[in-house]
Amino acid sequence: MSFVIRGSLAWETDKNDTKVMSPTKYIWLQSDYYDSKGKPFFANPLKTYSQRELNQYDIWGGISIQVDRQNVQSTKDTLEQGFRDISLCCNLASLLTRSSVTWFPARYVEVKNHHNPDQSEPSTNTRWMCLPLSRQQEERTSVRVKDDFIEKDLFPLFEIIRLAHHHETAALLRRSIAWHSTGNFLGVGLSRYLNYWESVELLAHYFYYKFPPKIVKRPTKADRRANILNILTKQTITQSNCLELAAECANQT
Image (spheres, rainbow, N blue to C red):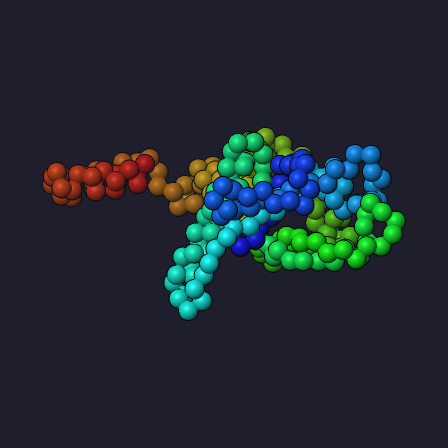
């Protein structure tokens, strides 16, 4: 099972194109670091740009597993354990180095080098590479806009929020937009939901208490007091129902 650890962890290695095996031979890692010192940019432009400008480095890896294709449950358990172990390795690398990394499933395949970046002559050598697989459609899909979006949608809204006179409301809108934008960036559905929910909750909570009670149908202080008294007097408080009644009263505050 192959994978790629990608992020700000640069593994400068003396073991070029060599796997480093764990003591149990269960997992192996291999640095894909490209040493561009003293080399022209166009010797390997993609790797040089990725490392210099994006601070992005790759570490290839793989774990040794055996699956029984006739046993669906056993295969599922084995794959899930493999995913957990890959995550553990990636998370430990981040913990020990304080680097920002993530991992991607990959294919470990043999490819042909039609051109050697360090030589002017073509090369027909082959090498094994880890090619990360896309985890979600968004990694392959872009959002395209026209000039009208920038001029008629983005800039007008930007100016309205930037020049808002009520600083508290403006700050709230900025926070809400930031939460939503972070949700768009995240790839995990639950994390996205939490960010979107928080974005809406910030606005709802703020304006619920800013608008008059009649507009948002918010009980007044007198209404809440009357509701609490009604809850406490409608039945006898006992040890078995006291927590339930307390919760009902708390919902009125």
